[in-house]
Length: 85
Image 1 (cartoon, rainbow, N blue to C red):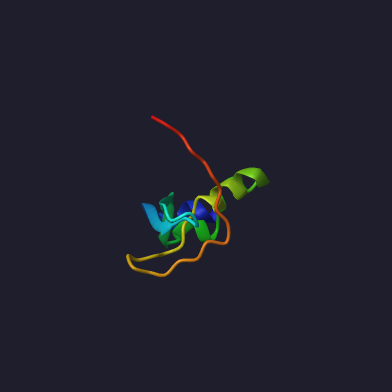
Image 2 (image 1 turned 90 degrees about the vertical axis):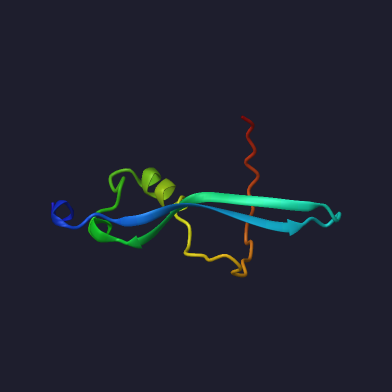
C-alpha cells in the first residue's frame, strides 16, 4: 500500500491533569491520557482499523489536542472512569 512507503507518524504520549473546584467547594482533579500527533506521516493514507469501524472510533477517542501548560480549557463532557491500583 501507499502507506507502507510513507514516513512514520510522530507523536507524544501525554497525560493532561486539570484542576478545578467542585460546586461544594472541594478541590477536584481530572486527567486524560492519550497521544498527540505532531507529524501524521503514513496516517494521512492509512487509518488503523479501517475495516473495523469500532476500532477506528476507539483510536480517535484516544487522541488529545495539542495543549500547553496554562491553556484555558473547557469541559463539554466529563466521564467518570475510576480505578484503583
